[in-house]
View 1 (cartoon, rainbow, N blue to C red):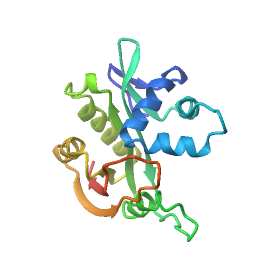
View 2 (view 1 turned 30 degrees about the horizontal axis):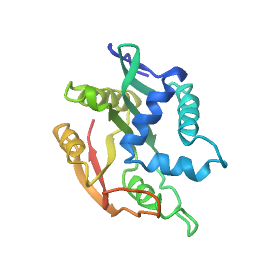
View 3 (view 1 turned 90 degrees about the horizontal axis):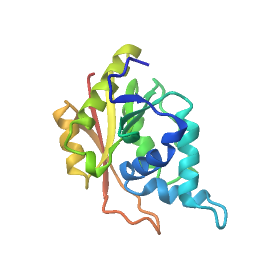
Length: 193
């Protein structure tokens, strides 16, 4: 991991409540829908998300902006390797567009989650987190950056485009029963770090 300037730091398990909210925001409610799919009867869906984020925080791969003692923005990403992931006939249809697009961004550092709580937007945290992502990719020798953005999120798209990302491909959004969304298309954006 590269050095992180304040207010940025690696996430810890105590950040899990904020991380679950931020991940759900970035995913347009899809994470909450998926957590509900795996919940046992009577289980708190948000608790599933908090547990998942607490576990992921132990891997030292989540960057947060810590302000006033809480995580207010986050970056979660990973390197996509040189080989495409197989998409078999049993691959979940709502996840298929994401995997198809990731398979078009081989050898890239993928920005999986970039989110800031509403009251902290407009302070440049998103751009700074993308700069951190660029630094992580450069340090790892990864030649490209990638992100998938929803067509109904023009603010995020403007941020990525200001940072040099350009559209490479799109896939239609598959909307299962029970997931409320305005998203109709997922766009893959890429750039050199």
